[in-house]
Image 1 (cartoon, rainbow, N blue to C red):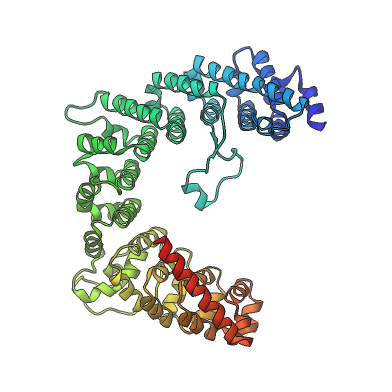
Image 2: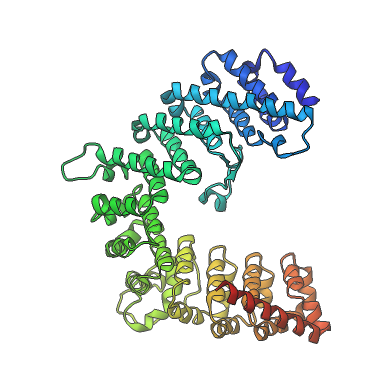
Length: 540
């Protein structure tokens, strides 16, 4: 009733309300609570009032958000159709959802008629991107003022699929065709480029055949533009802020023949130069990731590995990390990259320096810098406390931990003092390294690491990050290893139960049982161990 009353008040002045900041925010909150018919009526009024086919409203900083919110309600268009017991009132509601469908198609027509104005406009382009998602039948989370945290910023937002009317299937094809006629804007305009990226992403998910055609046509356009004789135009676009993002998306969505053509005809012999460029190094990372499962990867690796030291010096660690991750995924060139990294960090020769590799990789410092050694000849290794663990160093070691041969890393880990291991476990970046090395080790290797941690487990349990590492070690540990952990923790009951992090460890490890009902605890742990082995055999 409240929604109906508010929307009745808006009638006759919808355009004025949606282009007002307060009115826009209010309608954005109300539309998800409205019926499809009510949303359709709002859009119908906006179209009639603006007199320019939604353009004025969609390209307004407040109005654009309302149009997006209205489009998103299309995911509810067939809710009543799913219920076989629909009443007469619900059947009328079902018919009224056709009004919303018609208005979405009308908006799409308006976009096609003014395509250049929409996709170049900072607010209008977001309406087009939401429209592409709705016509494709998939939606991400709504845009909000809140910025995502560090972890969420790196990954694409999850999409939810929904059924679409048949008319949308044809309309998406028409809209993509109109966009392809304006492909030149994707190169020159960063805002328009984002629209083309959305178009490719949606089609890849919902219309794979159409996506293949669009990828092929986009690449033909980009490679067909004039450039210096003998130089591929892609080398210019890869270094441009707007078009490099589009090429990244193309690489991520491409099938094998397109990737092979991209490397053989355009990028071969130029990868190191591109990896050293502040913008072009990101598409190189995407290409390295995309080629990991193809025979193309070894050739790409052989070219990039020549410039590892230069890439490190340029600070483009993402390229090195991705190279290591692709080696782990493909199972190829793992020894080569390990030897290359040992040389790059100056710990390959003499062989006694191999055991220093872990702190060097994690801190991204060469042997001389880390150990404050004057020359590369110095063979005396000083005890240096573990410091300056960095994000990319952590990512690099996590990738190396997935290699078939991890003996160098594990030997280096065993040379760290118990205090260094505690520092590693309590560090935001280092804790992931220790967790990866513990969980990927054999029972024997894990036992050796846990032996080194003796005396530090209580402090680990009381640490926000250390407690997570301890839980991961527990989950992968054998019964005898769990018993050793429990024996060290049990005497500190009052300290552990009063700590905000350690109390969870106490509960998850069932240490009260361990103290008071040891035989029962042993029986439970043995049962869990058997279950874990059974499921691991099935999964393998």
